[in-house]
Image: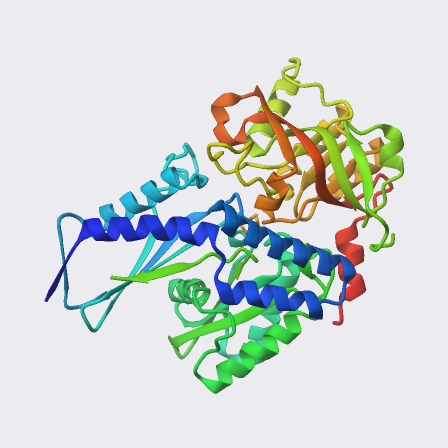
Amino acid sequence: MREINVSEVTKVVSQLCKDSCYYLPEELLAKLKASIDTEESPLGKEILTTIVENAELAKRKDVPICQDTGLTVVFMDIGQDVHFVGGDLYTAIHAGVADGYVNGYLRKSSVDDPLFIRKNTNDNTPAIIHTTIVPGDKVKITVSPKGCGSENMGALKMLKPADGVEGVIKFVVDTVRSAGPNPCPPVTVGVGIGGNMEKAALLAKYSLSRKVGEHNPNPQYAELEKKLLELVNKTGVGPSGLGGSTTAVAVNIEYAPTHIGGMPVAVNLNCHAARRAEAEI
Amino acid sequence: MSEQAAIKYIQAPLSAETVKDLRAGDVVRISGYIYTARDAAHKRLTEALARGEKLPLDLKDNVIYYVGPSPTKPGEVVGSAGPTTSGRMDKYTPTMIEQGMRGMIGKGLRSQEVIDACKEHGAVYFAAVGGAAAVIAQSIKGEEMIAYEDLGPEAIRRYEVENFPAIVVIDAEGNDFYKVGIAKYSKE
Ligand code: SF4
């Protein structure tokens, strides 16, 4: 049994909020840079150059890459031999988010009641927290703030088993095409297949925390990721949706066992400012 | 509609002549004064109009930038300030264009009603590169609070801009560069 004081969690979460909003993951920045050469549209090339310049400027100045610093999504892999002390874990996570957003000059975009009141909570809390219990005595925290321009373009469909691979391909490509410029392409396409309705949505979101360039370990799904990326880049949407050959930088699929009668598929699009920072305690 | 055309340097507020000269796909740099407003400010402006009240700013010839910046760090003029999704303003836009608004800066698709209003009244829609918020902020040289201060990042501000980078997406003839550009590169 390892004891961890929740104040440690607060500190780490606060730092990760700032880091993720200021510094684009390196492998993503490298991929965006490389796409300047392969992009077919001259205007698209110019837009990609601006996007890279912007990420580099944000890093140099410690300012947000994008003004929409999102709702804060926190994934936590908690070792089952960990014992949290010193207070309530979720309160500690929210305190970290509040501290990071207020002191890091990040925009507060969270409203308390979604329908009637819609009052800003002024510190970007509550975070959206997903915990998983894993073997061991470590805690891995991933903070992925996500803006609404891309989140609003996600979609979920309860496909039938008979729809098969073709059905999945059509749904994913249609979702990217109809999103057009809105999710700030080039996007990362997160796909969750299987489970039930909420499981598919969670898998799609979780797949976005993968590093650009990594594929699903199952070769059939890895093949499908490559094929989907090719098809998505044929839509012509391009950088900023103004036409071009770089619509997405990656397609990530996560899958789970499902019912004999169903095949839920969720698509979650992430913008070029796909922010993510992680740490281990 | 060449996308390799030289950059056009224009002044805001926009004159009718400037607008006539802009084509969907043109790359521009905007200097002068523009105003910020997003969902909540649009709602208040159109509600005020419906009640027959005078607006806190004269929309005539002006450019509205759809933006909700991040907080300003000490020593900076503004925080990161990239465009927000324009489609959420579509409902209010034709009314604003009728009031004389001549330009909008945002990102993403617009409705047919907005395109029609641009054509009818000679207005243009510019896209700024979504997410390029730190770079865009560098072209903002001054900021002044104009109205609805209680809305925080959604309040109406006036920005003094110098070479603000944008691309003409909908011109006064009703051309929509999202459609043109995507069709050109589609291999489906
Ligand atoms: S979609 Fe992403 S890059 Fe675009 S404005 Fe929203 S948060 Fe920023």
